[in-house]
Amino acid sequence: MGRKRTGGGGTSVAVLGPASGVNPELPRALWTRGEDAVSAGLCDVPVSGAFAEDGTEQGLRGTSVMVRFVTNTTKESKRDLLERLKKLEFDISEDEIFTSLTAARNLVEQKQVRPMLLVDDRALPDFKGIQTSDPNAVVIGLAPEHFHYQTLNQAFRLLLDGAPLIAIHKARYYKRKDGLALGPGPFVTALEYATDTKATVVGKPEKTFFLEALRGTGCEPEEAVMIGDDCRDDVGGAQDVGMLGILVKTGKYRAADEEKISPPPYLTCESFPHAVDHILQHLL
Image (cartoon, rainbow, N blue to C red; front, side, top):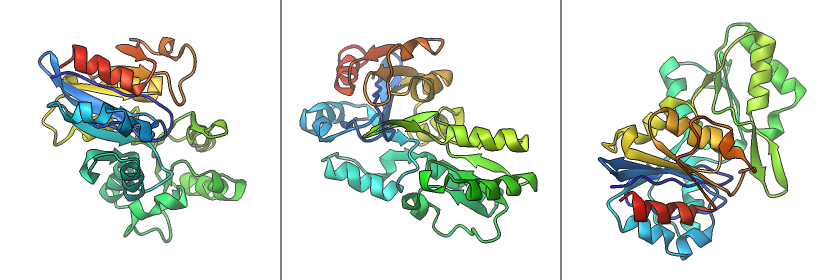
């Protein structure tokens, strides 16, 4: 089997097994391989209907590769993301999606804390049932409408009192329709600096995120390929755990990004379909 990866800006997607296409405005993908071939793939690139329409998805699904969509998005719940992908005609099930929101909820339950949730209101369904009154922890994701002085100062005071800081991810920036915009990373770093504490990060590029995404696939990191448009968080993070990383020049990609990590990406492609073509031709 061979390894695969996808890149782009927007939601991340991880793919394992028979892959399906991704759109430039959706998740990224990770693939895994066995022996000299890929057996699973993770994807984290922005995707659009074109991915499903141009046969890229069908080409992946027609192989023995397992596919998973992995994403750091905190702008919408897993259920909303699934519905968005289906509207783009992706042949995908909920268990093929792994999000950093899921990882954050798992950690909150493990620590048995009551979080102050600095996340987009659309992401709140993924924390349904979690006690949030009288908070004794801070969970922070991408929440532009909450990143103002009063709210951040409340989080600051909780942290000074010993509350743990959980960062869903620390992306420096992300891609919007009107251009690049600050991600949650700068705000997490500000709270770390002000309180002399260190956040527990659960999303990409953390090793635990990629290992959790692979859980249940029967694949080792060395058997997987990650495709993404973020050189550090997608490709660098995946390669740090032993996967192959493919960087795509879409979404949040900036010129010369491939020179910012060591080792460099296994491969840099113009688009997700090009990455898939390489996998189908050389890694399966």
